[in-house]
Image 1: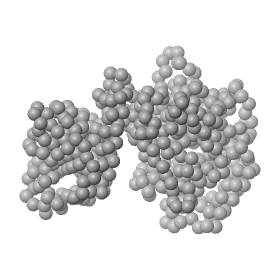
Image 2 (image 1 turned 30 degrees about the horizontal axis):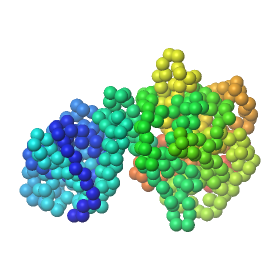
Image 3 (image 1 turned 60 degrees about the vertical axis):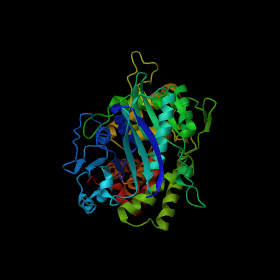
Image 4 (image 1 turned 180 degrees about the horizontal axis):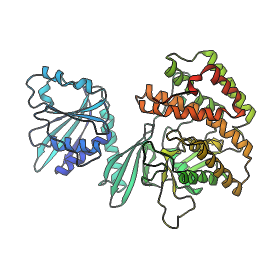
Length: 515
């Protein structure tokens, strides 16, 4: 079995063993096999209990030893876990009856006494060998086979060093639900107060040979540098973006102000918009759009970032996700060349007729909707008029139509916004803009419909991609809502060319029914 990397951790006491279990739980994911070896009393069960409780997010979770049951299954954890004890296994053949390889398709498998399985366990795994050293223990972690644990172990050590330098080396660390990206987040707490760790290593996307990648065409951030620059610019403009407390930009590590867990949606099932919070959120947009915002933004002397234009290339690249992913999702076949050419031509006609991409450009934060807006308690009185609205996702910002972020909120892809509330959101924006700057409401409503249709077209493609490529089928539940929003936008006369394309060539996108 080939070894590809490892790390030694000194564990002076049981609490240190538990901390290691909680830390590894932050990096574990479905498909991981973690093998725990060592003598009786060496710390395997202590580690396993802390690991499982961290994944459950509950320190009271019962974690009995599976010595006699052989396998204990946990479905209430963030990722399903099978905790196995092979101490009583008498032959490798018995391993097949436990169904471990099948479980690895969607679960984490934690195995104690792996040596009793001989070669019956999959070779790609993380081995942790516990040994006594005086009053404490050592844990030797070794990544084996083709698994990527070597990279994760190296990242763990890099983060531990970063947090130590930032004064958070002793912090309690918990998983924080992130977005649909590859970024990873933790909530930290120690005597210095709460903070958020953003773990976002640079991920260049070169695309296929001879052609730029979608990320490059659509100007998706490949490092944390744009985030840092936009964070400073937003704060300078009066928005409540999280303060950067510590950073290693080249490593893709940021320690951020914790804006709390306040939401702009209710805790009901399904969640619903809290109207006044949505209206306050759109007033913040009006406040930003009324200013002469800079096209070039900086983070100290470390970063100078030119905000890319939301041009026709970006517009088409995003909209074409519908053709690349949604069409195969509903039809089982690729979109044909004729339909694709007609799709581009229809959008070009709309863009040219409305002038949407050239009229009074401003910052487009790009994902300004409920998952990325934190409702803060700013105190009384608030430090600034809009401080209750925390903005946390802006690294992909573009320079383009003001209507884009307004429609992101007014047609929130994650929660159902009624047409009445949507109308109030648009009215609140127009009223706030009118009191601070000029706004051509007729042109804005056309822009709103165009960018709404483009955004919802893109999102149908993204949700289909998340299902098929990334194994995240729960996003499909949002498709009927997005389909309804798309239909609302296509009713505007400015959208006639692309509305005809949908009716004639892809009517499935306009009538998606909830399952």
